[in-house]
Image 1 (cartoon, rainbow, N blue to C red):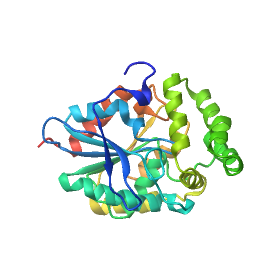
Image 2 (image 1 turned 60 degrees about the vertical axis):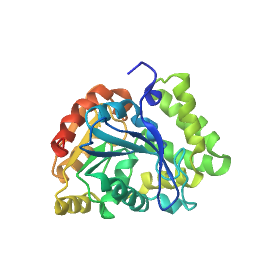
Image 3 (image 1 turned 90 degrees about the vertical axis):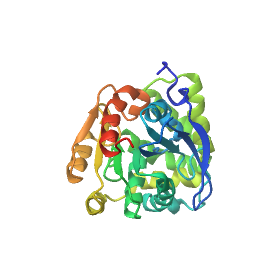
Image 4 (image 1 turned 45 degrees about the vertical axis):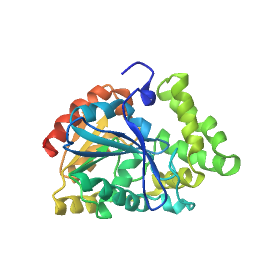
Length: 291
């Protein structure tokens, strides 16, 4: 990956729109040159977007997988419902389950979910989506319990309600990101634009879930085991979202182990895409053999 491109990494993915119960979902779709072994549906985290997966989309397609990364309802270029409660993981999971079922009509589907997207994935599975595999990337068992990201959510909510999205982004989100890593001016512009384009209800509703969502790991494990769905849990070595011990515990309860990506923190797809792909591709080949 060219230094500094991150979410703006050039790729061949086409911009498409997927129907959903709350309006069209903006997506990027990378398609292999041969019949796909299956589809990888990628769900981003809070304040994220489909572009967070830009550095890995072409590699997934080049290795025989159809890759579809979406903006969740209310994120960036996807419209969403008006009520904050509609952005809880179970509610979003039901929407994503319907999208997954549409995409799975062309073959098996694996769900790859980053951060808050992992909580949505739980709702997707519990809503009855049939998956060939589930990958949780830098996600956790439920709400944040403490830490810098939790503190930023607590501080940001009253600012947003009183002064709006621009004020909360400039006073809490951007400074928090700057302490973690430096991005190019072009990437910084995208990150700010997508935050301001996201719905108020979505930003507040997802933030509420990250502060109060109960753990559903055991329920998720029962559903996955009943369907025979394999699961993987992956995290960057320096993840500052959920503690690695919590992610390890979640992995064990799901019947697997935590796989660590060196040279990455909370966003391996942009921080160390090659390291992430070195883990993802063998895993996907084992779940989705080439046709």
